[in-house]
Image (tube, rainbow, N blue to C red; front, side, top):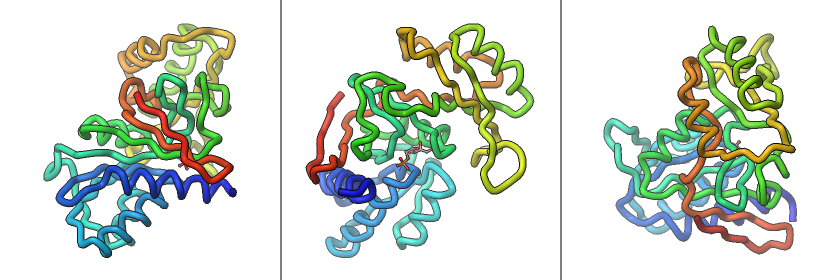
Length: 235
Ligand SMILES: O=C[C@H](O)[C@H](O)[C@H](O)COP(=O)(O)O
């Protein structure tokens, strides 16, 4: 089974199990969420469901609009029944790395407004320990003027190395949907980190907007496996 097929079976299962009539849901970002929106659009038209979708990125907003789903926002829908989102890695404790595609701030805000956050992923995201599968580090969204001092400060405090993420089809750094930069923290694989404590400390550093560490947020994860089954993990 291809990676895309693995993403699709996880996404379809999550949408089938968690989306009900008369609900407001958060729509995450990335390549796996594309399949969740596809399934949602099928169910909305086949079952005549009333579902309001709150996006977590520009990409998610486009997906919602292109699939003729009802677009909501946190002003009108401050309480969401669930948020369905992808992840770059999910460890045994359901701690996530997110932001590989540059989306993490709005994703965390939307997930925090939801009763439960449901993760959809392919089997390459399933890991026992952060860094085991995802090798690009933990994305940290920062205010542009602070990236140099923050890079040294985080390296000195926690070890590892931080790199400013560069754009692909544009000269210079990658700019997030919120106008910020991303530092990818290649943390020290030999160290045992308490991710909750690390996340709290990072967020307190002036200039750090948000981190791609999602600790104690995800309720359930669905992994599409290579053999065509869907593996589930609960918090
Ligand atoms: O920045 C992107 C988001 O955090 C995504 O949810 C994450 O990168 C996983 O994306 P994908 O489903 O493409 O693997």
